[in-house]
Figure 1 (spheres, rainbow, N blue to C red):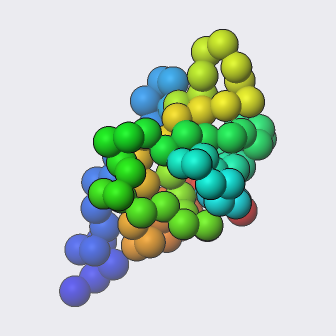
Figure 2 (figure 1 turned 30 degrees about the vertical axis):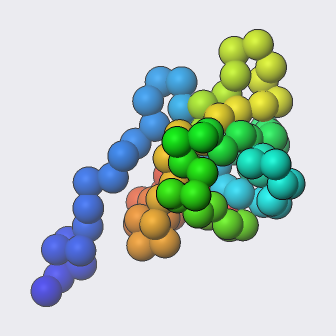
Amino acid sequence: MSDNDSRKNLRMPEEDEVFAVVMDMLGANRVKVRCMDGVERTARIPGKMQKRIWIREDDVVLVEPWDWQDEKADITWRYEKQDADQLREEGHIQE
């Protein structure tokens, strides 16, 4: 098997979403994320993800910044470790 066989079509950010890396767990369903647009935001884990998708530090997520408060965002997607590694290899995420 070649490396191309293990490549997956991953969910990419839509026009209002941005890649982010979880930096710190704040509690109360909130996390501190470093977005790829250079802004650190407080992101909210929505109710539909709570207890279904576990988010930890250093996870790669997609966030949707709020229109009315740019320093806050909602998490819309969490990538598995293999998917995050693929995004890093393809240059979508800079550490």
